[in-house]
Image (cartoon, rainbow, N blue to C red; front, side, top):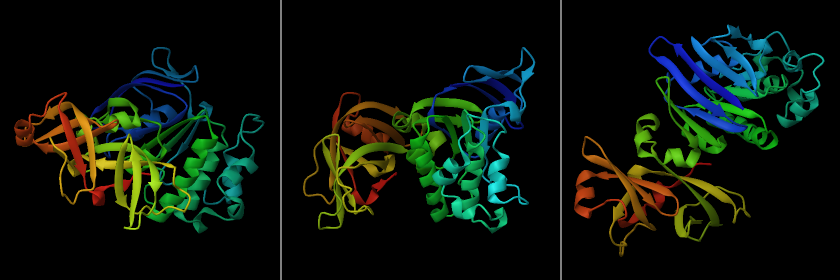
Length: 358
């Protein structure tokens, strides 16, 4: 386990927080400049907190009271930054071997990492001849060869185009599946969080606003300020029933409800597989009766759990449809429909507004 209880005065605000991070992928999510990278640097030993403690697997690596501050090379931590930071004068093989501690029996074999990240064809090349995605794969491999208890990935896909980003994401998914280590993944892109993370830590101006399971946190309207109004919404875990029903739509089963969305770009035989949908709050409408003769295909019955009023014209309504869904509606609608905890409602979602978050 990674335990953090630290305070650090930064240029624009004070970072202060307490976290316990277990094996698996934990995403640090927040706006640019929120303090995510500062936290990574404190864990890695690149930035000393003003006070507090940091412990990795029961071993204290920083304790202000005792004057303890282990240097980066003595911490069981591997770090990958967004620019890779490879040594330009070394080949890929040289970069990988540089990260491997001499005489270590706990470090994975070079061949294992090369196979995992498909680096065999790159071993003799120099970093300048590699694509951005290839450089990041090498950087991840070098970090893994240090045999870290904690792998810190700080915006590793920043600056990559869509194709390269998808390439590296695929390798990170494989790493997650084949590893039981602690992986801390820093990003401000929700789609990366959804695809990789088991847990989510929301950070805003150096404060841990909330931490917990991914789906639960993204369903909380009060965290909208961190997530952003356009992105804010819920994640629905569904099962693929049919990829193409003849109308170019995919049919999904979701907590007893049937949902339709434009045909998923998936291989044949994907029926029965699980999938995560992102549903933006602004794309959900509420009514007290099921719509009749409507163009909207997706209707989910549920119960209002809570209503979060805002100072302006809008309000956020959390609805239990077997999973957490929420709608962004006007305060007038809340009043006229009598929306309050316990009210039974029908949530309607246009098929065209749904998309896979995977």
